[in-house]
Image 1 (cartoon, rainbow, N blue to C red):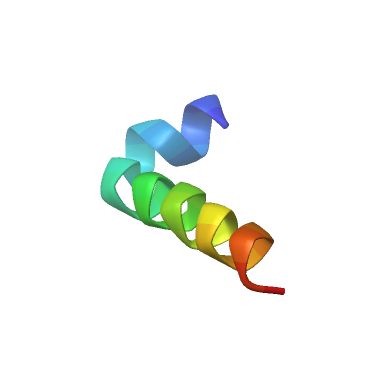
Image 2 (cartoon, rainbow, N blue to C red):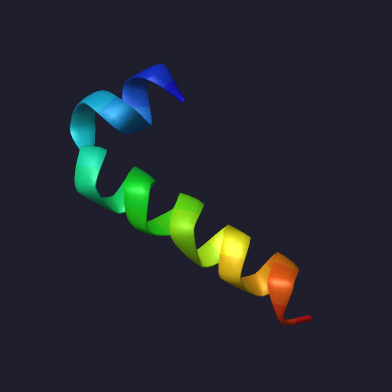
Length: 26
């Protein structure tokens, strides 16, 4: 995720948090 992180660092962080929430609440 080097390119995505460089282009959309905020979005990458949001996706990570959303992924964790989804894992906790399937």
